[in-house]
Amino acid sequence: MRKYLFFTLSVFCLLTNSSKSLSQDLANLPNQKPFIINGSLNAKLQFYDSDRPNPGRNPFVWYLQGSPVVTLYGIVLPFSFRLSEQQRDFRQPFNQFGVSPYYKWIKVHLGYRSLNWSTYALAGHSISGAGVELTPGKFRVGLISGRLLKPVKYIDNPEAVSIQTPAYRRTGTAFTLGYGDEKNNVNLVILKAKDDSTSTGEVPLKYQLTPDENLVISFVSKQVIAEKFLFELEVAQSIYTKDMRTELSDSSDGFLVKTLSSLIENHQSTSSNNAFQTAFGYQSDIFNLMLKYQRIEPDFKSMGAYYFLTDLRNITIEPSVKLFKKKLTLGGSFGTQVDNLKNDKNLRTRRNISSVKMNFVPVPQYNLNAFYSNYGLAQESGLLSIDTLRNTEVAQATNQFGITQSLNLTGEKLAHNLMLNFNYQKLNDRNENTSQFSEFTTNIFSAGYFLNYLPWNLNASVSLLSTKFIQDTLETVVLGPSLGIGKSFLKNKLNAGINYSSMKNEVQNQKEGTINTFTFQLGYKPVKNQRFAIRFYHNKNKGQRLVSNSYFENKLDLDYTLSF
Image (cartoon, rainbow, N blue to C red):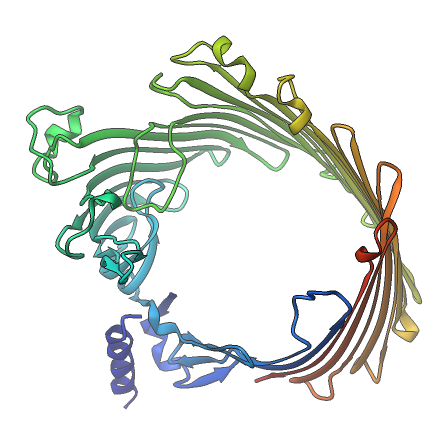
């Protein structure tokens, strides 16, 4: 009976053509419970009142929402629904369903799968189909084939305004062959994909929709040498045909195009581009050093990846060290990025970044974190001289500094926590024609003290927030304190809390207004899986210059949650 039920469930999941990713060990199937249901149910009533002319909220809102999760023989199926006075919504997992059952070293992929075999060949792109992975010993062989994109037909309404953007059905097959373990391995990944030009019908020329074809071959390797040195490498070449309807061509722009002519035909719109990334580093308990290099040519495309930046070359170095018995950790990142690799753009953009971070824990009660970064962006001459574009030349540098420290002291009755945070950021624009519109400085300071009286389950807090933003000659300041107190009753079944904050807003040393916020919340948990809550919010904005800027808001929430 159990085998029959599992077989029926599997067939049902496949037929429903269902975004859920599942993996199940078939060897453990007899130990799985046939049916489990859990989740949560939440009901809320919300009342709102304001003297604003257009408050933007309804005076009364109710909704009921739930997220039940059904488990059948270890396969988890989450559902969700939401009911309100304005919305009826129900979601179930069978829109995109996939399962990957495995037994020992044999794994089967069915339905929707998102596999990450390579950064450039098959990089997490969803594929609806079937596949298999075999991993006997250190060998690895994998094959998966299916649909990459659904077809979207062109539809016009009577006014000749398109309702949806058309797209061709795209199918693909990926193959991987590798050897090794997690530390040392080599893998070859091949992806072949193409569009079906007959899947959408006739499409107007304005959409410039073309049936494309793509072949990507990627070599991936990772090696750990002497337990300390790490080497990673990935080399990929993509042969991409922009339009399979273009005429065939005898010429080719790459060795792979000639060698693999049996897998992909060479059209006039076919191009070949490369991607390369590597990393080499030293790793130990005290000192780490990583060197990284990445180069992606401008027209590199892959149907097996959703998105990545192209036309760039990155070089970075990332050192870190631990000192004073690992109480002090210092790290950094230094690098540069340039584009216009083929020198076919008017300008070349260069980005430089340097950052340093520190973590210091001299004693368990104290923690200090600090960082500094300098990010530079500048343009260089390309096809055109930079002098001809001096008025709009980009030459900027952003400096940022931050420090956070916390002190925790806990005794038999009292627990203290003190937190201080400061963040500074400044953008410098070296182009005098644009600096008045882009340069800015920001200072943010916050401090908080939290006290807990353990015998009474009583907690209190006080904090201060100050922000200053300066752009050109305009200075804006927000400053104000916050206070809070809370207590638990009835062995933590009942919790009550009150919070108050007052934020003053100033522009050019003149008061613009003050926002006062009062919050009261009460929560009651009579049993383990049920909770009642009441929350009341009152906001009062008092404008200093214009009476119209003054307003108040009241909001009351009644909440019930059931967990099962």
